[in-house]
Image 1: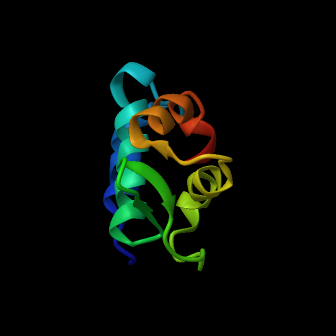
Image 2 (image 1 turned 90 degrees about the horizontal axis):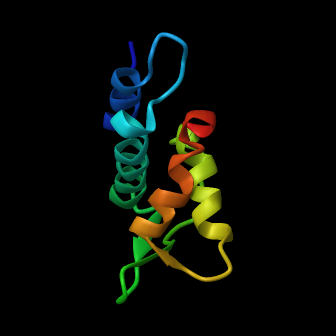
Length: 96
């Protein structure tokens, strides 16, 4: 049996019986966990102003994080983690 990442484990704790994530209980922490996992695997990094940017090409090892990676890498201008988390939080149930 394959072990789960901390983002996958957090998702299992945050999702309710209907498959939804209550934004007050888990949305933003789940997005931040996903961003931290992308950072720890060096898919993204932050510049001197704390804005997130791509660090390496996607290799699909963390396929459940691909939508977030694509969101970050497709932004016209790099943005800080707090802006991305707030924007992405409302959709995290659809992507993670």
